[in-house]
Length: 279
Ligand SMILES: Nc1ncnc2c1ncn2[C@@H]1O[C@H](COP(=O)(O)OP(=O)(O)OP(=O)(O)O)[C@@H](O)[C@H]1O
Ligand SMILES: Nc1nc2c(c(=O)[nH]1)N=C(CO)CN2
Image (cartoon, rainbow, N blue to C red; front, side):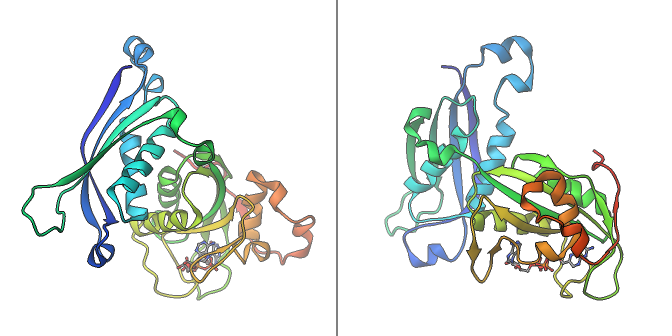
């Protein structure tokens, strides 16, 4: 089988069996050989006929940043699984190297290498989850921040148009742009929340005033049909059904999630369609 090599990918993750290693992320080197049939790409010169190694690298870096591990073996296995989510990857060799192993004996580095074939990975791990996310922005380049979010989220499979909405609650502030996207993701709900928070941070979001103006706000509305009630994460999001600025775009991507007759029962907040997000 042909190979695509990714060499010396540096990721930051929390990993290690010693207590202090669980307190701070450390750099890990990742080397990958992706086993892919490159016959078509060699002729067509089209990215669609191969595996985009940039996306693979992004996926691995994000997964590593969003999770914690004890063993290099576990990290390597998770990287292999994430890589095999790319349809064309038939098998993968992955080496993860700890660059600063905290052992008393002098040594340069420690590493683990795994080989995984598509058939080794159990199917449930490969089946994506459906999550629905609400996006809002009322500061700065509002449409640009929505675009940043849509482009940063894992596999968007449906997106509503953009709505201009009057602010609901909080201090006096400018109008919002709101929209809703449906994604397929391999992240668990908590990792998805952390991913959303990282995207908000990339949009220079600062939490200052409760319900105050923000460059970008991402709320996890639904995750499959799961209910979660933890201090950091409530799913379904508890305020969906009182918000026209959520239900109006939600109805475009997942009408089955909207209660019957909601348009007649909610107070008439201003929600104006502005068309599809411009690229
Ligand atoms: N489903 C969820 N999606 C996003 N954040 C959530 C969810 N459930 C709980 N949270 C928690 O809410 C906290 C506050 O989030 P944030 O400041 O964005 O609230 P908000 O967007 O101003 O208000 P609202 O939740 O009413 O939209 C986050 O730190 C997060 O841990
Ligand atoms: N129109 C509108 N109002 C809001 C919004 C929002 O996204 N759109 N978000 C809030 C807190 O998340 C509070 N108020």
